Image (cartoon, rainbow, N blue to C red; front, top):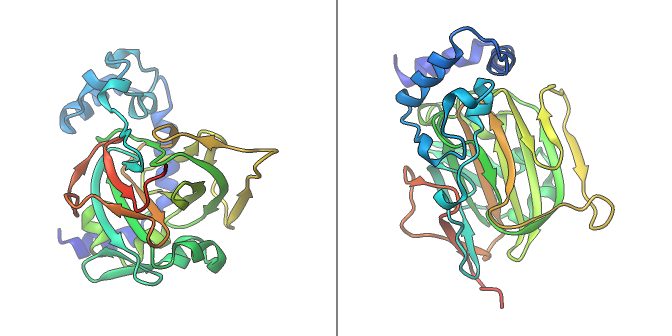
Length: 290
């Protein structure tokens, strides 16, 4: 099957219905063949259970508990250097580089709009115009918790409804504006490097997206954009570098990190396809904090 034919099939599938079925089945504790399926999944995706706090597969009450398993801290040391920015998740770099005005590179032949990615709000996009982005793809076998690249205070969380196209590399190369069309949660923080956006992009078979401060954001699916502002006093959320931010429940997913212009530089050894792990150095602040 060619990439284009597979992509065409995705347009007609009931994305959200399939994802809700997956969400229900992966949390059903009496699902037939759950244990054999989990063992097959571990073997098929080469999941290293020695890294997990709980390595015993039989100890997980349902498949989603296994899928969102916690890792032993020593397996993912956090970059501690002054001004170092750490990878928010395990996965593979999809793309990273400069935001050209308000255009972000998706894959060969495809860009998408920063304003559209952030829900159509030019004010929300303004701090990131001409800045830098890093996109990380999480395959089904990867660790699916998301962590802070840099310490920061939460300013705003925006839920943006959309489709649930697959975000696997074949589809980013064939579906225009994919990340700006899929359902997503945009979290904007104030950091030592200025505003930072961490965007959790859903995908087909992703049962839900949740954050540590608000719990499950989706489902239920909404037809409208929902914006929640966080003040410095009443409902302040402060997270340290490496601290858990949120997670994806089931499926492959994508994380996009944005910074403003002249604030950060990415590691020169990283490029499209580079494998990364949560906690390793993603980049450095242009001006190291004192």
